[in-house]
Each structure stands twice: as C-alpha cells, then as structure tokens.
Image (cartoon, rainbow over all chains, first blue to last red; front, side, top):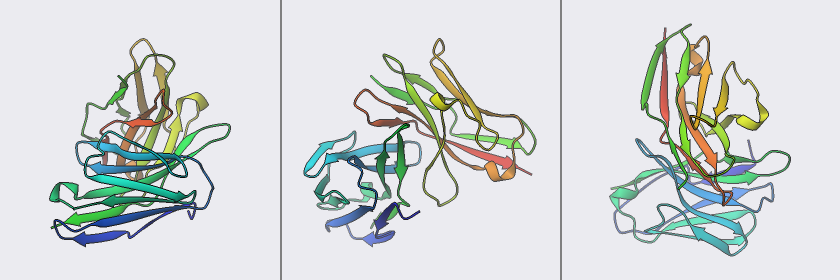
Length: 113
Length: 108
C-alpha cells in the first residue's frame, strides 16, 4: 500500500546520536500519529499531529520531538538516542469518512547500541 | 480514564479449535472499538470494528457494554490466523488507545 510510507525501514545507531524518522502520506489526511511498539506494552502513542505545525504529546513523549511542516510529512526526532528507545516505530494516519480507522505504515525498526 | 486490557499475552490453540481473544475496556460514554491484526513483520491492519457488525476472515466480535468487553472469536482456527492481535478504543479526543496485544499461535 503506498498510502503511507516510512523511512528508513531499519536503523542502527549509537547512544547519544540524534535520529530522525520520516513518515510520508499521499492521502492528504489531517491527523498523523507516531507510536512505538514494545513487547508487553503493545502500541503506545508518542506524539500526534492534527494539522500543519499542530502537534501534541502522547503517552510516552519524553525524549522525542516531532515536526509537521507539510501535510504529507510527519517527522519524529530522537534528540539523543538511548538504549530504551530501541523499538519498532509505527506511523499512522486517521482515515475519515463514513467510518474512521487508523491506517498504519510499515514500521521502522530502530536499534540503539 | 480510557484503557484497554488484553489479559492473555499468548494464546495457543490447535488448528480447527475455537478461538477467543479477550478484550476489556474502561470508557465513559459510548465506545467505538476495533480489532487490529499484525502478521509476522507486516504492518498493523484493521480486522474489524464493532459498529460494522461484520465478520472478517471468520472472526466476529460483539460489544458487551454490561461487561465492558469486546472479545474476538472464531469457531475454527486456521494456521494462517497466527499473528499479534490488538484491541483498540477510539477515545473522546479522537485518538486511539491500544491494548498490549495477544499473540495467537495456531498449532498444526
């Protein structure tokens, strides 16, 4: 599905380095989300956006920042990566219409060594 | 507070056996509930939602407001059903709250 893509798909980085993950959508949806997926915790919301330059914190936002300068792109930045941020990161868009759903990207596997 | 719980981390059943994945929620008001599935190394995808009252891949889920539950059921499990299943609630703020997930393993 090309509606939402994430880059990179895999990344290994060292503790203390900055990392930026990109989420790109082609469907012009207003709402976009970043989640992390960890065993035993399921999906936890990091940040979300409800429009260009409009963002808000989720459940686990410490250590993360986001930016949305264009409707189609939502960036997640780890200012100084830590080993606890090793995870799989999923971006999602909210598809609206007659029925609402969250539609997910393919995920980015991040390893912080 | 809005919360979704899935008490089983792992559920193993034999092929052809019935499956029930449990989901309970806490929510004030009329909830909108969903089941998402993630097959190995794939993206999460919507399986079904309660307001559609649909059956997808043989799975059904009924909302029980009295028990605040939305259990996912299938009468005869198939090996291809092996996956991670997440129950989710659309919250007042229009965000989704996900449960911790249950890994279903269907044994041959």
